[in-house]
Amino acid sequence: MKRSKQRKKGYLLGYSDFAEYSKDSNVDVSLDLDIYVKGIGLKSLHQGLWQKGQPVTLDEVSKAQKSYTEKLIDMFPKEVERVLDVGAGVGDNAIYMAEKGMKVTCISPSLSQEQYFIENILPEYETISFIRSRIEDLEIDEKFDVVLMSESSNYFPIENGLDQTIRYLKEGGYLVMGSHFRKDNRK
Image (cartoon, rainbow, N blue to C red):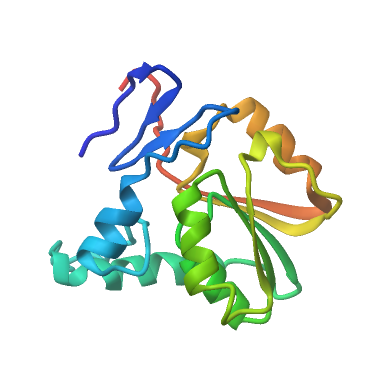
């Protein structure tokens, strides 16, 4: 599905996701969780990192998603201990980081993603926590070695979101953005 540039009534239309963007609303219109996880049985919402020659089939999606997560997280410096995962999806990045010994605070404004974390991730991983919040509204007193935005930077006004992420970085910390970027704004 192509990304829509259209904005209507507070919704940002994304790839396969309708992300509610109303500050005061508890409405959650997230199709990714239902389609990818509940419908297809995938463990990730990422589009994946496809290797040259890898067949682009439904059977290969989970391999490409795992490859994406590993490549992204394995780029972190070895001394990273605490990570803020902005737009944590269904926690595949958080699980991988926790299994590598990192403490991960996940945020998302999605009610369905919060429920997924409560039911499927938090009971098994003591080093993962979840806060239901938009990055622009987040108010915590913690600093992190890494702030990770994995395919999530397109769901918030970039200026406000980046100001907030910098606020939560330790001195010398890293902002890691894995997303879809264009080289030319005219295309």
